[in-house]
Each structure stands twice: as structure tokens, then as C-alpha cells.
Image (cartoon, rainbow, N blue to C red; front, side, top):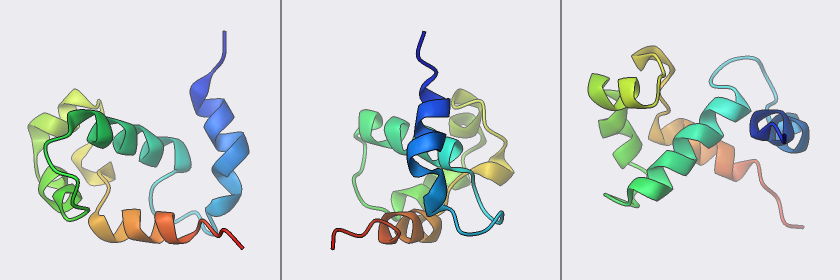
Length: 82
């Protein structure tokens, strides 16, 4: 069985430059759920979701570990296509 978390960590773990903030696997989990939800495709929607304890419980993530729009922007900015 393929462990998706391990695969994501192996492929994208180097994007994380410090131990501060969310881990790569946690961020991808929240991104996948955000895309699947489809309620809003604005990055600022992460700030609204971060304050929703019901959504955090649905993801089985502590409210303190919810992604912010700033963190998501930094993560997307780590991808370079040059």
C-alpha cells in the first residue's frame, strides 16, 4: 500500500526551509480538502477556515495547526519553475 504522506514528504519535504509552521503533509492535506470542498478558491478563505473549530475537527487537525492564507502563499512561492 502506498503511504501518500510519506510520498509527499519525500517529494516536497525539501520545500520546507525551517521547522516553523506547518509540515508538508499537513499542508497538503488541508490543500486537498480545500480544493475538494470548492466553497471558495480564494486563498483568504484559509483564514476563515482557520477559525472554524468544526472544519478543524473534520480534518482531524487541532485549530492551532490550521493553515493561514499567508502560509499557503509562502508554500506556493517555494515552487520555482526556472
